[in-house]
Length: 355
Ligand SMILES: *Cc1c(COP(=O)(O)O)cnc(C)c1O
Image (tube, rainbow, N blue to C red; front, side):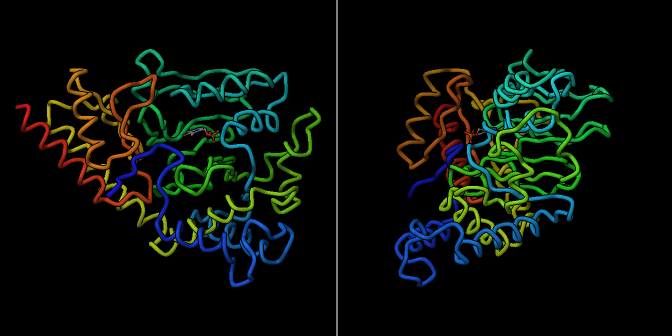
């Protein structure tokens, strides 16, 4: 039995893997593989339509928000966002909460001014800054809703009227939030939505068309919207896997049902960590992520020992990010609570043996 705690690409529902592999051989009884059908056929149009409609329904998006499936991973959005939203003489406000936010800031500086409104770098990104102000004249405010590497998650937004942009790669569809409150959301699919190779981008139409620079067609959100997200050949299989995962999510009861199970999984793991002095959760309690749980042990030898016990027991992807060390367990939507229970049982056994 394998327990997949990988941070991304990561676990997806078994039903999605089964259906996706079946469709590689014979898609919808057409005798054709999903990999060999044209992206402008009614067959694939139905996939895109269902993916968009299901995403819209699950997130309860209003008609001002457009849904796109774009290439290039979240890292492409790091520059596509400022390219579309920030004039050279304007300023964008960024929250610096981890390595992904830092990369987004670096890219934004290529296109205009960036004001970092707050940073948690002083404590190795182990908390989410609070009480900062977002300058009223900024073109937009950018934040990372969940810091995949460091294990922190935003539980509130700053009080501001300027457009909100969020990188939700690692916690989209995992908890109930007001998605319409955001002007632009992006998420690489390979954590909670589907296979690598595609981004889910949600953008409010009235945000666009305000920059003076010329945009390459593939970088222009407006052209993608006009083309119904089929401006060129999309990553067909990746979009198909997204559609299947969204369909699965709807069958499970949607985002509220996911939130409930995600709350149970993360509570089980954090409660166990808090009860065993051998393990030390690394981030501020109020900013803990329910998707990526990060902890360390004070003794490197014990860390090694526990890591090999995890491996022997089928735990995959439990080692912390190379710059952070320690451990990280990613508890994405598709991870069953049984995997978390197996992990916490191993922790308790280990702590008993070492006591
Ligand atoms: C994984 C991740 C990214 C990078 O995604 P790519 O698809 O590899 O570009 C960006 N932001 C966050 C929050 C992530 O978790």
